[in-house]
Length: 536
Ligand code: GLN
Image 1 (tube, rainbow, N blue to C red):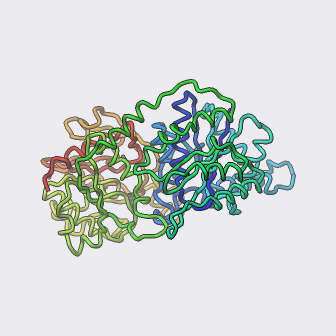
Image 2 (cartoon, helix red, strand yellow; image 1 turned 120 degrees about the horizontal axis):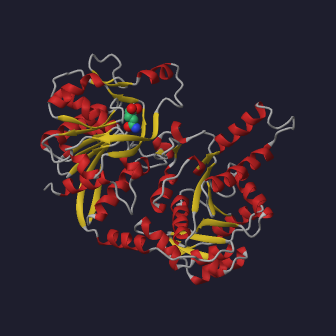
Image 3 (cartoon, rainbow, N blue to C red; image 1 turned 30 degrees about the horizontal axis):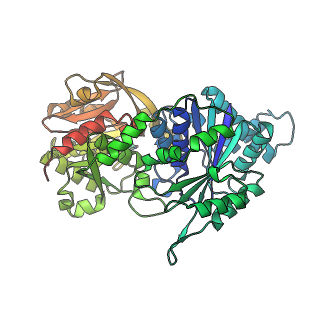
């Protein structure tokens, strides 16, 4: 088994996730089985308790593990589903060491930080074995030189000492351009390599991130200062679309250089599908105006695009494959409540997932607008739940209909908590109270979703605490909001679909978590197709 560690330097947010995903795709296309994994310095045990505005979107895997958006990048580029072996927070690592100690599994030895480093190495090796990987890619979170991630670098150093021919390190560094003089500077990049050297690591490849292409004199300067060959410094300028990144790396011979470092030969060269997808992206020129109505819009370290990255990606994949260029507008639900005219001029409306009572009335206004004006509507999780609330209020006339998440005293709790989960929530045991991960759903015949999926049995990823209240099934169906999909036992409502509407679909699951560039999600394709027909 081979191991490639990937670290970042100089600044955070230079696209380590995209770079790791791109390298994974290149090695896969070279004929190897690749398992990417992320070592995240956070002490949170998983990403489930993190606010999307401070940490970006919470991505959920089939096995229910809550992770950060980098896992989404890995899955999208590799077109492959991952599992818990691909995400390790420092919190989860410490937790297992301490649990082991409490279980007397260290045989009376004193337990110290080296045991944590050993646990990191163990997990990397187990991940490779369990997934039958030829190459394990390890993205190290954080930035070289800070102390939060030193144990991951130490694990890298030790593994390299044990297996010098099987371990390589790719360092993603940054060369800023000073605005007043327009000149690219290599000193911070040199210093970040020094930081790695101080941790006992000599990088094998440098990815030179910069606003524009690094030139030859600077490549030579960096090579000279770091001791690398100029061929091992790979230009990584800003790109218009992130899907170009693997192709740029390939053109700069990254795959060949990297394989050489870990003593492997290229078995295969198969980037044709990815290339044709990138061509489609470039050719898509017909604009498609979509409104996303949500609430995680305050600007913090992470932008709204980070909070909804999978929704945007799924939308883009579907649109590009149909020759359309999505223009996404973020509409703050609280603003819609004050001025519903903000919704004019859009060809489709999405209400994505969300939590809590704030701003739901604005989302309900948007849903009513889409329903009445026959604008394609796609409700993702909370967006599905609120669509049933809107329908109950405005079509069934149940004025106080609500989710108990918003109004626990509603006399028409059309969305409520599953009885077995209620106890845990009351006990404030929030970890583990959600329905998480992939669950099967059975689709009803003669529905639009059945036609779009082209099959009856599907599996989609979930992350929610509340469910549709079955007492209201008959009433909503009678008035035209069909239960189009349920759990296999028929007990849980998974999909609702409005009759006599070009596209009004709500899913209790998150279809956006399964959208892939090379395999756009059928429901997003249906939504985009219906939206493209709307004239504005
Ligand atoms: N807040 C809702 C629930 O917990 C919806 C969650 C979501 O949109 N992911 O059920």
